[in-house]
Length: 180
Image (tube, rainbow, N blue to C red; front, side):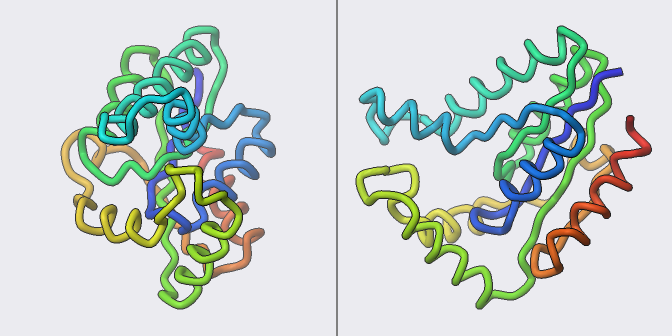
């Protein structure tokens, strides 16, 4: 059975780092929504358009292709709202894949602020997907919904990124070993 691993958490919480390491350790490709959205914006699509939704749909289509061919995949995305999380539930059901959520939090507000500042510094101001990461976090906090619906029934682990990366990776891999 194919494995679909999906991250969830605020921007700069540590999702991408955990997704990349978990993907590498499991030999699974990682599909990240942020670079997809950046590419959409770079193509000249106006930022007032639903580029975030488009990026999620592109990631879903790519993941579906991997799962349809018997592979597994890791999705790196905020997944702040129930419809976003349920999209992965529906994909896993269509493809007969095992779904697991890795929720990543950063429990230390100062560490989170430092990561946001570092993230903003790594990306050019012209890159509108990252131009105002502090605003993105505030927006995500406002939009963050509790885990309800079908996604609430899916096994999920919460990883706190203030812990050493190795600890989080081992916790994630132990959690996922029951799915493999």
